[in-house]
Image (cartoon, rainbow, N blue to C red; front, side, top):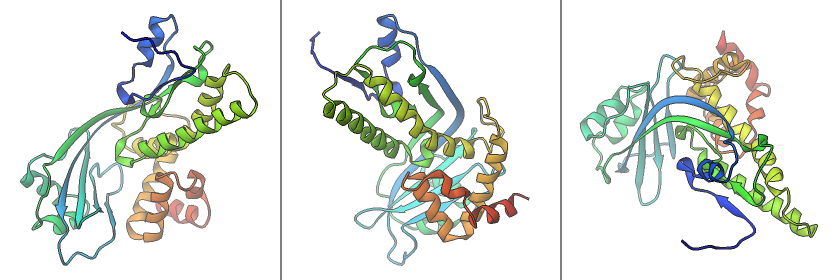
Length: 282
């Protein structure tokens, strides 16, 4: 074992983080957690882009929840390659063999992904990942905390990966940490209390991607977890928004910007979009 003296230790070890074990070893309680049980899986492979393909750089295929649990993405990446990801929930998982993969793609709400890749060259093996749940660890609620110890990224809060928020959220948390460190440095303060400053700001930020993902996930009755007040209405709103996005390119682009944390969640509730979504709810 090697002893390294430092001012700050940051646990950025991801979903399998060790902070709770380390805290228990020095007499601190575990943080409160908010969890959502998801039972989600996705299979992903790269395909050569067909020469005649001139579609959108991002194709997103879904159907209205809770009737459709499957979804798919076809994303144009570098070197004439398409990244194709198929997603299923609650035991209806995408296969890892080519025939099964293509069959699953053909049975999405639209068979567009299947038509794009059915005769294409598969460039990579099909990777498969299961994801059982999201977790938000409320370190901001801790009464006692070891000074100079911080937790960030998936170790702090991890979301359903099908919404592609994890790296964006971690990047924003890193920006928050830089801001907090800069403030302490400019004031020539010690680092006493830096954990509370960071965790409070990070928790405020995490609320946006967490609420966004939860709104879609709780549209399915099989999703486990304590449903926050008003979540049923929010889930219906997001399900209707999902339906609208299938027909409206502008809404699709707006949703992508919100999911990637480029624009605030509140923009999805603004007029005239809200009236259009509300009309679909009924």
